[in-house]
Image 1 (cartoon, rainbow, N blue to C red):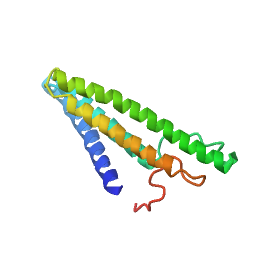
Image 2: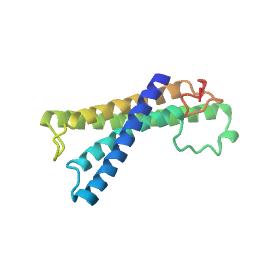
Image 3: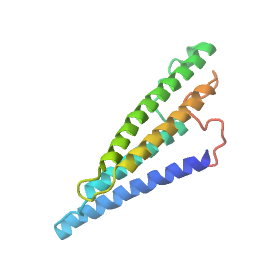
Image 4: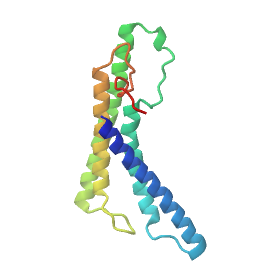
Length: 165
């Protein structure tokens, strides 16, 4: 699990740094050289896509989604377990549905040879990666649903693992 966390974190960090560096260079180019970097907007959009969809599994891995748990201390144990399972099954379904839609888009993009307008970067690979990351996140919620107990942290996959920060 740590290897996955580090890999996703590295990809997200590189994408964020790439967006920052490209935006900085683009602004400097516009101010000093009188023109933008060709395709900077397209690359920034693809880096944003990469950042968002690598961050979603990281968010699930760390249980950093917004959670309403005000009533948890008042709920009976059985209802609390059911609530944890239900919430994770709903997340699982939503993520698999989104992955299915993105996969359809990826297949169409690959079939039609969709590319970015200016640089001609193939979009199919990005869509396939997005679908795969959504499925990965869905699997995380499946694990959380299966191992839910009244004492478990309903949305924290790493809760049982020691943290070496």
